[in-house]
Amino acid sequence: MPVFTRFRQPPTPADEPHEEDTPDEAPEGREPDEPHEPDVVEPEDPGEAVEAAPAAEPAARTAGPSDAPRPARRGTWRTWRTRHPRAALVLRRTTTVLAAVLVLGALLLPNTLVALEPNRFARIPAEAVIAAVLLLCLPRPARRVAAALFGLGLGVLTVLNLLDMGFTEYLGRGFNVVLDWGLLDDAQAYVADSMGGAAAAWAAVGAVVLVVLVLVVMALAAVRLGELLAAHRERAARGALTAATVWMTCVALGVQTFGVPVATRSASGALEAQAHRVVDTLRDEAAFAKEAKADRFGATPGAQLVPDLRGKDMVFTFIESYGRSAIEDPVTAPGVGRTLDAGTKALAAKGFRAKSGWLTSATYGGSSWLGHSTFLSGLWVDNQQRYRTVTAGDHLTLTKAFRETGEWDTVGVMPGVQKAWPEAEWHGLDKVYDAFDLGYRGPKFSWSTMPDQYALEAFQRLEHGRKRDRPLMAEVILTSSHQPWAPLPRMVGWDEVGDGSVYDGIEASGVEASDIIADSTRSKEEYGKSVAYSVTSLTQWLERYGTDDTVLVFLGDHQPLARVSGDGASRDVPVSVVAKDPKVLDAIDDWNWTEGLKPAEDAPVWRMSSFRDRFLTAYGSTPHPTGE
Image (cartoon, rainbow, N blue to C red; front, side, top):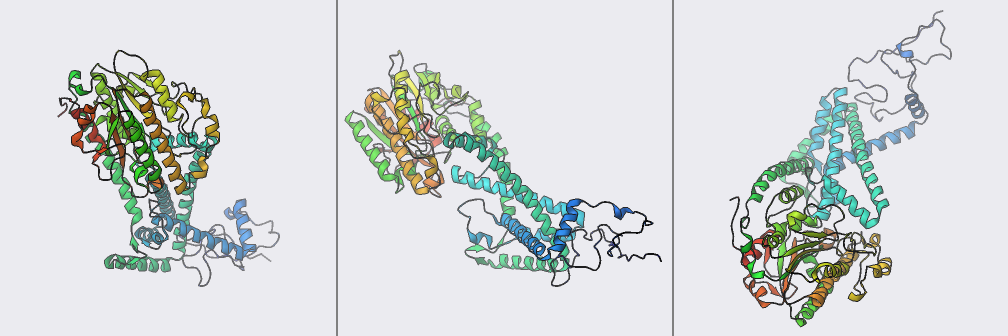
């Protein structure tokens, strides 16, 4: 007798699921794709025989398309889920829940650590409702593509939000997709200098792996949810309609839970903010290039620049991360305050007076070069594009003004510079001493290549203490107060500094960076110690080596990162002018600054970009504008 084989009617719609997919409406009480024990075998392809075949098919049967070998992995999965239906069901449901958590979490994720609270995730994202409706309307191939693209978009948004968190925590601003990719190299270099090359390499690898995982997993999660919606089309449509109605009602009534609106569009808002940031950056580039050409003192002859400072040795010194928090934060203020008071008294005993105020820095938490260029150029240089624009031009800097007179030798002491630095010409420096030119033979202290006391002693030996025909103008960058503030150097006898070998034991016995980097209180304590050390080094250098003609201007370049300065901290930094000649300080009486090295809380606060013109004007410079 002939052998009869029973066939199931093949699915006809193009959108009908197969393999692991489930019907649009799974039977009530069973999870889509739930394994069961059928009378027949589910077909791999439309038209495939579904009744269990006997152990041996008749030889006369003609092989067809459905007899092609199945992929081993697909067969293994089908076999496993058939033998372990409960485990397969748990696995599928767990995967679905995780997919939902990932997608909703990405849609609701804020872009700052301060906002990262549980109440932010108890909301209804409009983007989820819209995406669900769109996926329900699409046929299967288009649905999968759209879901994958939606997931990739969420992955990119998640990465941008994480970058925003990091940049806000360290630099007080969000990540700029146009300008800030180069800063990631600087971040790796900082980790290498602070924690070692191996830690930096692993951190870089981990970051790349994390980004790839976020993109891939988010895309897979979105596809999984898209297929689940199609499998329960009617219920999914009713749910989307209900969610949309609830969302609009919450918007209309302003409904909140735990202090935040229930209805939100935070994901699209974040993308909109990034787009605005890009547009603003591109517009700013052209506007700033025009602004940089206008210079109030750009055409001033050298003979008319700073005539009231002729014969003075000018020293402009930046102290890394020396911000207002160092003087006013309850943890750091006592130690730093005592240091400033002691320095004021010690300098007064040597005949020096000081006046101090506040400047609002163009940067925060890092990117010190932005603060330096803002202070020196009189332009607001708050991003890398502005920095490149201004340093590529011929805008007059405060330091270059002294060289333009032809009356000063100009030098830079830059212990933090460890590679080619073409900006020296823009700064107006005839000679630059970088990390390799100062003769240091001691250990590094985290990021800082050498202690400030050593850098100042080397400056004295190489330049300030030499006999010369002309006075000196120096720009000095002190780095010991650079994060992570561990290990820290300590003061030694100035006659013991030598080549720096004396610091070997000090560095070895210091606190490890890993011990304080995640501890806000300890970071504040060590930060305060670092600022006290830097200020002490500078004031003792002036006590020891300052002359009747030495004029010192020193300031912080920016506030420390938010973990130390606090959320919402200002960008203010202290600035002081110190001199023996009373005429130097009399020239700035109308600035209304505080007497001494510690500015009063209510002392004047200026934008850092205003200092150049105020300084040049106070010391007799005559404006001759250009580009107006």
